[in-house]
Image (tube, rainbow, N blue to C red; front, side, top):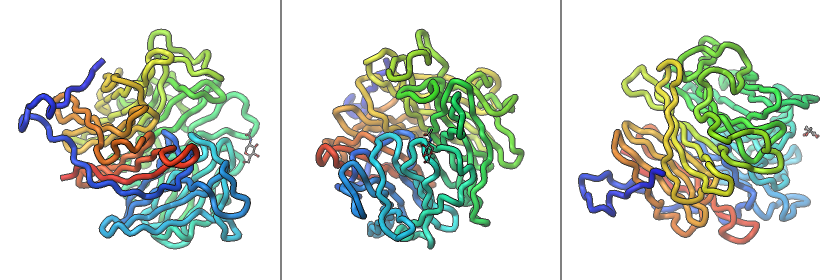
Length: 443
Ligand SMILES: *[C@@H]1O[C@H](CO)[C@@H](O)[C@H](O)[C@H]1NC(C)=O
């Protein structure tokens, strides 16, 4: 175990790293459905001077709403004034869509394209597309159903992770279950070309008979390459996963490469694709008993950050939760690879093993500093930070102390400021929680 020493407690004063400085807490909503919680999701984006936070509202408005249902909301917050405009995604009749509660599955992901249009994928657990797009730029009040515009209309979709690249196009990764397939659920990658306003499938990039893909994250390097991160479970589905994986897609060549730098020998990729897996099976770890149980050792939830120092290099860092023994604490681990360093590129370390953690995780990297955000079960959100070869610090995010934050997303601005989406699923009552917004650090 690599338990962390907090320099300020050790009296190291100016020799120690300054603890990352959070802003004051912003409450986005205290009417959040308790099911508005997942690890894989992507409910936060920032573009054009606004932050966009997607969440599920409880109790729902609209026709027929019950406590077991919700409305899918997008709150747009003005970065400079703090003004919030919010609205629901709407049915064709112009009412708030009413969706079934299903924590961990039927939650929203949001991204804004380079022209400012807001895109929401939501409320799909092995279902056909539920996709909403704003009818005008920067406008969360005009989110209309555009599901019919998606490719692959007969594929049943779960876990939409969607991100904007530097050119303003969107990239979407989902777990797809092809109609009639009884052996696997694959990893599908799609691209939204903002100039033409159209979605197209790029690839069924991961598919392995007997297994299901669990998308985690998408990041971009400065050359426009798309970096993908996902997990595997036994088919059809499991609460725990294994063999966390990473690959890099180059739109300019249409090729996928592993962290070693080698082009993947064939598509779709499987767990056997060389150097794909950042966390191999450990002693005693197996997929065998995953269905209807959650035996350890196992992995669950992962996020990724890239950095390019010196220019021209790409370094991949992965934060993930790993449970070494059934019933034991979910640790926070980090895996790293210098892209293109040849066979066996991954190294791993345990960063936090001092107690149990919940599924929310985030990682950012600025300069020589890496930050991993996580949540303590029975506590709230924490940040692990390390600069260069220093030790890790582990600091409670003071503004959310006592708020019972258990889910989060972290994104980083160009100036190194982290923007945090912080979900406390049940801190109001058994079916209602809160959503908070916080920024941390920055140059
Ligand atoms: C696939 O999705 C459709 C529409 O959402 C649904 O009716 C059907 O039951 C789903 N199939 C499976 C196998 O879940």
